Image 1: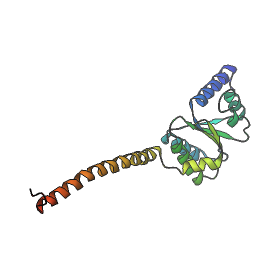
Image 2: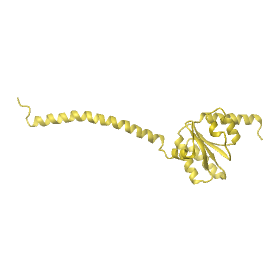
Image 3: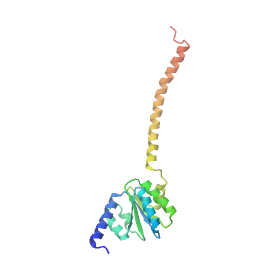
Image 4: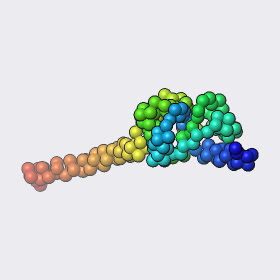
Length: 175
């Protein structure tokens, strides 16, 4: 049995984790075997996240006065949290893939970049390309316009040179 100091310390640790994390996925883990739980924790670590099984009343108390109070205020059933302050897409992809393989693991809700989202939004987030791929596409689009501009500017000079060369070969510049 935990004494008051241990409970207070656990509450503060959870509150700190909730304040530092912009992306939180609330899940249910009912009837997961130990080997499945071990695989889940490994999957979450590889995606750059953290995982924690929480009591509903502890989560509600820890979330009071934070952005997560709407998310964690009225939890029911067995609850766990997967959270990260890094890329939410990577964590959502890992959790969604795991949920497809293990029916005992389900989503309840989530918070992405400070906004509460439902299960459908979590699945949509998991379907997005990774952040690096989005950056690469954006840079390609920016660079494509610059490349076209340079080609156009160079084309005018090149075309003028071709016309002058042709005129020179045909002796159009006689005096």
